[in-house]
Picture (cartoon, helix red, strand yellow):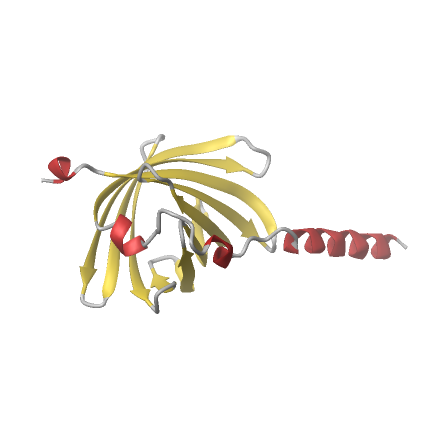
Amino acid sequence: MKHIKIVGALLFVLALAGCGSMDVKDFKGTEPRFRIEEFFAGKTKAWGIFEDRFGNLRREFTVDIDGSFDGDEFVLVEDFVYSDGETEQRIWRLRIVDDHRYEGTAPGVTGKATGAAYGKAFHWTYNFDLKLKDRTLNVHFDDWMYLQPDGVVVNKATVTKFGLTLGVATIFFQKVAQEQQE
């Protein structure tokens, strides 16, 4: 009887995990139109926080981003600085598949990241080897980015393992003014 209750509870959790998922195509026709390769071309600054599954603030960070084309690939160099002084660099190589779809790779990403942009929204998912002190945990990132009318991008990235939420990163991106880039 105990096993039946555990299986039932697990099925209930899995059913809830599948509920309420948005479709990026629902944003078709919304403005302003968000194109990754346009917004992130040149220099961008980001500010973010990471909250654990209980809503506790675990990390704060800033990111300096430089985006440019290298042949057919759009390259994003992200330089993270965490509030505890730790630094990290991630270099994304993105390929534009068609007018809406993207694929990408970066060190630590297992397989390919895939995404799609419609209207003001961009949905990006990938598996990532997250370094935690003395071990590495392969987790899933589910990113939703929204371009706001004032040129700010709001990003909510849910981090999961086996379908269970480990935490949420909230990030705000803003273009660096042209005169500050020179």
